[in-house]
Length: 140
Image 1 (tube, helix red, strand yellow):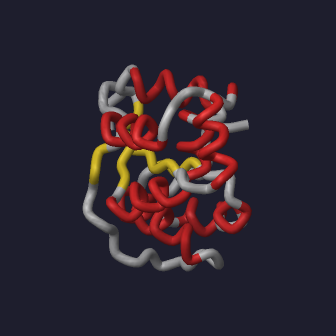
Image 2 (image 1 turned 90 degrees about the vertical axis):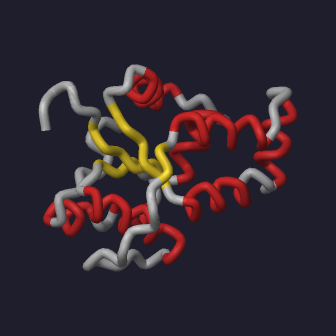
Image 3 (image 1 turned 90 degrees about the horizontal axis):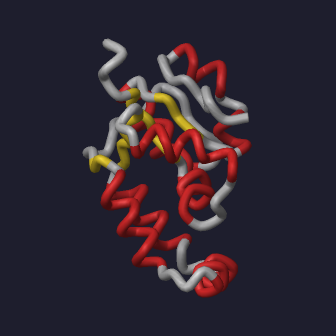
Protein backbone atom coordinates (compact mmCIF):
# COMPACT_ATOMS: atom_id res chain seq x y z
CA UNK A 1 0.00 0.00 0.00
CA UNK A 2 1.33 3.42 -0.89
CA UNK A 3 0.78 6.46 1.30
CA UNK A 4 -1.80 7.76 -1.21
CA UNK A 5 -4.05 4.69 -0.86
CA UNK A 6 -6.75 5.00 1.80
CA UNK A 7 -6.55 2.77 4.85
CA UNK A 8 -9.39 0.23 4.77
CA UNK A 9 -11.45 0.63 7.93
CA UNK A 10 -14.42 -1.12 9.56
CA UNK A 11 -16.48 0.82 12.13
CA UNK A 12 -18.69 -0.91 14.63
CA UNK A 13 -22.12 0.54 15.35
CA UNK A 14 -21.07 2.27 18.58
CA UNK A 15 -18.33 4.15 16.75
CA UNK A 16 -20.86 5.23 14.11
CA UNK A 17 -23.14 6.49 16.88
CA UNK A 18 -20.21 8.37 18.44
CA UNK A 19 -19.56 10.01 15.08
CA UNK A 20 -23.06 11.15 14.20
CA UNK A 21 -25.15 11.22 17.36
CA UNK A 22 -22.90 11.66 20.38
CA UNK A 23 -20.30 13.84 18.65
CA UNK A 24 -17.61 12.19 20.78
CA UNK A 25 -14.48 14.39 20.64
CA UNK A 26 -12.36 11.23 20.28
CA UNK A 27 -13.90 10.74 16.83
CA UNK A 28 -12.65 14.07 15.42
CA UNK A 29 -9.58 12.42 13.89
CA UNK A 30 -11.76 9.68 12.43
CA UNK A 31 -14.18 12.22 10.98
CA UNK A 32 -11.25 14.09 9.40
CA UNK A 33 -9.64 10.91 8.01
CA UNK A 34 -12.92 9.84 6.40
CA UNK A 35 -13.66 13.30 5.00
CA UNK A 36 -10.15 13.66 3.56
CA UNK A 37 -10.24 10.19 2.00
CA UNK A 38 -7.32 8.92 4.09
CA UNK A 39 -9.53 6.10 5.35
CA UNK A 40 -11.99 4.06 3.30
CA UNK A 41 -14.84 2.85 5.48
CA UNK A 42 -16.26 -0.46 4.31
CA UNK A 43 -19.55 -1.88 5.56
CA UNK A 44 -22.16 -4.50 4.72
CA UNK A 45 -25.92 -4.46 4.43
CA UNK A 46 -26.12 -6.28 7.79
CA UNK A 47 -24.14 -3.47 9.43
CA UNK A 48 -26.45 -0.86 7.98
CA UNK A 49 -29.47 -2.86 9.13
CA UNK A 50 -28.06 -3.08 12.66
CA UNK A 51 -27.60 0.70 12.70
CA UNK A 52 -31.15 1.20 11.43
CA UNK A 53 -32.48 -1.04 14.20
CA UNK A 54 -30.41 0.60 16.94
CA UNK A 55 -31.53 4.07 15.87
CA UNK A 56 -35.00 3.05 17.04
CA UNK A 57 -33.89 2.67 20.67
CA UNK A 58 -35.77 5.14 22.87
CA UNK A 59 -32.68 6.93 24.24
CA UNK A 60 -31.32 7.46 20.71
CA UNK A 61 -34.68 8.63 19.35
CA UNK A 62 -34.83 11.21 22.16
CA UNK A 63 -31.28 12.35 21.53
CA UNK A 64 -31.94 12.76 17.82
CA UNK A 65 -35.13 14.70 18.55
CA UNK A 66 -33.19 17.02 20.86
CA UNK A 67 -30.73 17.58 18.00
CA UNK A 68 -33.63 18.14 15.57
CA UNK A 69 -32.41 15.21 13.50
CA UNK A 70 -33.87 11.88 12.44
CA UNK A 71 -32.68 8.32 12.03
CA UNK A 72 -32.91 8.95 8.29
CA UNK A 73 -30.27 11.70 8.66
CA UNK A 74 -27.86 9.26 10.28
CA UNK A 75 -28.57 6.57 7.69
CA UNK A 76 -27.99 9.12 4.94
CA UNK A 77 -24.57 9.93 6.43
CA UNK A 78 -23.85 6.19 6.53
CA UNK A 79 -24.88 5.83 2.89
CA UNK A 80 -22.73 8.77 1.81
CA UNK A 81 -19.56 7.66 3.59
CA UNK A 82 -19.59 3.87 3.81
CA UNK A 83 -18.51 1.79 0.83
CA UNK A 84 -20.91 -1.14 0.70
CA UNK A 85 -19.17 -4.49 0.46
CA UNK A 86 -20.53 -8.04 0.22
CA UNK A 87 -20.81 -10.04 3.43
CA UNK A 88 -17.50 -11.61 4.38
CA UNK A 89 -16.93 -15.31 5.06
CA UNK A 90 -16.65 -16.43 8.68
CA UNK A 91 -13.26 -15.50 10.15
CA UNK A 92 -11.08 -18.14 11.81
CA UNK A 93 -11.84 -16.58 15.20
CA UNK A 94 -15.24 -16.26 16.84
CA UNK A 95 -16.54 -13.41 18.96
CA UNK A 96 -18.55 -14.28 22.06
CA UNK A 97 -21.15 -11.75 20.94
CA UNK A 98 -22.65 -13.00 17.66
CA UNK A 99 -23.80 -9.45 16.81
CA UNK A 100 -20.15 -8.38 16.58
CA UNK A 101 -19.01 -11.27 14.39
CA UNK A 102 -19.88 -9.45 11.16
CA UNK A 103 -17.40 -6.66 12.02
CA UNK A 104 -14.66 -9.17 12.74
CA UNK A 105 -15.38 -11.20 9.61
CA UNK A 106 -15.23 -8.13 7.36
CA UNK A 107 -12.06 -6.82 9.02
CA UNK A 108 -10.28 -10.14 8.67
CA UNK A 109 -11.41 -10.66 5.07
CA UNK A 110 -10.03 -7.26 4.06
CA UNK A 111 -7.16 -7.09 6.56
CA UNK A 112 -8.74 -3.81 7.58
CA UNK A 113 -8.34 -1.82 10.72
CA UNK A 114 -11.31 -2.23 13.05
CA UNK A 115 -12.62 0.51 15.32
CA UNK A 116 -14.70 -0.80 18.20
CA UNK A 117 -15.39 -0.14 21.88
CA UNK A 118 -17.14 -3.46 22.44
CA UNK A 119 -15.57 -5.47 25.27
CA UNK A 120 -16.17 -8.76 23.45
CA UNK A 121 -14.19 -7.42 20.49
CA UNK A 122 -11.47 -5.72 22.53
CA UNK A 123 -10.56 -8.99 24.25
CA UNK A 124 -9.77 -10.43 20.79
CA UNK A 125 -6.96 -7.94 20.06
CA UNK A 126 -4.14 -10.52 19.87
CA UNK A 127 -6.08 -12.97 17.73
CA UNK A 128 -7.11 -10.20 15.37
CA UNK A 129 -3.57 -8.88 15.18
CA UNK A 130 -2.35 -12.33 14.11
CA UNK A 131 -4.95 -12.22 11.33
CA UNK A 132 -3.78 -8.82 10.06
CA UNK A 133 -6.42 -6.66 11.77
CA UNK A 134 -5.26 -3.60 13.64
CA UNK A 135 -7.82 -2.98 16.38
CA UNK A 136 -8.35 0.67 17.42
CA UNK A 137 -5.02 1.98 16.20
CA UNK A 138 -6.04 5.61 16.63
CA UNK A 139 -8.57 5.62 19.46
CA UNK A 140 -7.52 6.48 23.03
